[in-house]
Structure formats: structure tokens, C-alpha cells
Amino acid sequence: MPGRERVMTMSVEQPLWRALTGYRVLGLVYAVGLFATAHEEFTRPWLAVAYFAVLAVWTLATLPKVAGAAACTRGFLAADLTVALTGILLTPLADTHERIVAGGPTLPSIWTAGSVLAFAVKGGWRWAALASTLVAVANLVERGSPARDTVHNVILVWVAAIAIGYVVEVARASERTLARALEIEAATRERERLARDIHDSVLQVLAMVQRRGAVIGGEAAELGRLAGEQEVALRTLVSGGLVPVPRVFGDAAGGAVVRAVDDAGGTPGDAPVDLRALLAPYAGARVGLAEPGAPVPLAPAAAREVAAAVGAALDNVRRHAGEQARAWILVEDEPDEVIVTVRDDGPGIPEGRLAQAEGEGRLGVALSIRGRLRDLGGSAELISVPGQGTEVELKVPKDVRDQKDARGKAERR
Image (tube, rainbow, N blue to C red):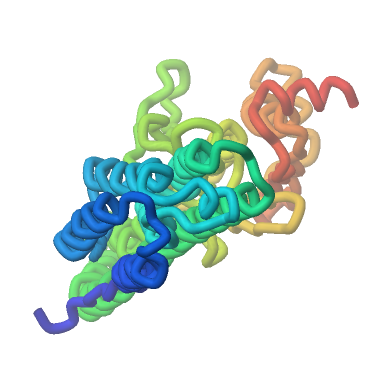
């Protein structure tokens, strides 16, 4: 399909499997060569020949098994390690005691390391530690006593296998991160392409309907207003998909309209949420939203309280400035705090009106806005000049963990 992005993936561990395949073959050749140069010294050379025949058939027949992680099953790894351990334990029966005490190699020799490395590449350092430990026990049993050279070889295999297993785990994690980044990049490019197409068609039509409806008036003005709201919602959607599903409900006492974001769609646990996602539903034809291009992370409880305070401020705009008043929301992401400013173009609040409202028991600003921010360890400042609108500035620290911790912090001050 034209314009569709294709994500290219590359396995960073595939070269390890290829190297392991070659190592097993070379390890077999080396073990057979060692036996061929000293076969006259063996007490039972026929036993060694029988083992090497089985080892050669097993190595060549199982090359496809070590070609990739999918084919290298747990059952194969267990059988492969059994072949290596059997060769180690058969060494005292085939070779002389003097050669073994003098540090002679086991029958499989370095081939055993290939079996341990298969565990490391397949399962990481934990599997490698298990396999190398079993090999260490078998080597100690074969030697009869923990000689210096045996302990040295055991520790070398053990450390190397665990190190390679750890590197494989890190490589897998990096591969997953890279694949995810490529997917996000492809999705972003596709969304940008769709956004361009929508901007060239649907958004322009909605904007034209809004302008023409405002000029014509009457029912056309209402249609234009609805078109403007849909334009804002669609523009927000194609710009990043930040709009959660809002719940809109009415206040039985005063008929006030309040918006809240459904918690079910939030981030699980205590992971930070993007404040922009909670403020996006407030944007509309008469409410502008200016936000940073990057996420604005806050603790879930803090983000919900800030969003609720913004909703209360916008509710005050509708109550006191009228349905035709315009409002603007500005989000600023500072290093230590988040600042959200709500400004309107209404008539402003007369001097002393807030104190009078609190005395009359109407505590919308005191509780819904200042109280919420105070519980979070933040602050809310209200600036109003008669005839020039009202501005509410909300500040909340970024280190707020949850509402209870913030409330306790505020009470200790």
C-alpha cells in the first residue's frame, strides 16, 4: 500500500547462533584430534571411539537445532548437556588414571563449552549458571579431587557462560527497545500522513462551516458552533490521540456542567500520567488549550486534582462571564513544578467579591480550586481586573506521590 510504513527488524542474537554452530563442529574436530594423537595411551580406546562416533553423529544431526532460538528447545538442551556430561564421566573408564591426574583432557574436551553456551544464548545467565554448575560437578567427579587446573577450568567456563548469558539478555532488551522505537516511528509517520489528509479536507470543511455559521446567525450559528467543537476534537485526536473518554454530568444544586475523566482509562498503578490527556477534553470552540509538545507527567492523583481544579475554573467562567465568554488554558512544564493557567475575557471579578462569596457560604474558588492545590502541596493564585477578565494560576510540584502524601506534607508545613 502506498504510504504505508514498513518496520524492519533484525535479530542481534542470530550471529551468536551462527558462531555456536561453527564452534560445535570445530570443538568436535579438536576433541577427535586430541584422542587421535594419544589413542595408544588409553586403556579402553574402543570406548572412546564409540563415544566419538555418537558425538559426531549427534553434533552433525543437531546443527539445525542450534541455528536459532526457536529450534533450540529445552528438551534438546537437556539432551545435549547429557551427551557432554556422559563423555566427561566416561573419561576415567577410557583413559588412564595417570593421564587424568596429570591434567589430561576429558573425552568431549572443549566441545562441552558449546553445550553450556547454548544454554547461555537460549536462556540467559541463569540457564548458563545451571549448565556450567553441572559441568563443574561432572569434572570434579571425573578428576576425583579438586586439583588446581580443574578448578581453574571450571571457574573459567562458569564465568564465561554467565557473562555471555548476561550479554545476551542485554542484547535482547536492546532489540525489543529498538523494535518498539521503530514501530512508534512508523506509527507516527502514518499518523502524520493521515493528519495531513484530514487537515486538507475534513478540518478545512469544519472550519468553513464554523465561520459561515457565525456570519449567517440563527440556527446556522449553532451548527457552526458544533462544527467548531468537532474540529477541535478531531484536531486533538489526529495530533496524538490524547483525548480520553470524558464523563459529563450536571450538578443537581446549581445546574453547573462539570467534566471529569474516567479513571478506568488511566494509567494502572502509580505510574505517572500525562496531564495533557486529562485537560484535552476541556478544549472546545470557546476554550483554547496550549500545551507542550512532550508529555507532562504527574502522579495520577495529582493530575486528576489539577484537571478538576481547571474544570472548576472553567465552570466559574461559564457561570459569571456567560456562555459566550472565551477561555484559554496554558500548560507549562517546569523542571520542579507544573503550572496551569486558566484565563478568560469576561468582565472580571469586582474587588471584595471573593471574600463576600466565602462569607455567604459559596466556596467554589476556596475549596474546588485553592483547596485542591493546597492538598497537593501547590498553590492557586487568582488575578482579576474589572473589565479585563480573570486569570487563575495553578502550581503543583512534580514530586507529589499521591493525594494523602501531599496532604500530610501540607499539614506539616
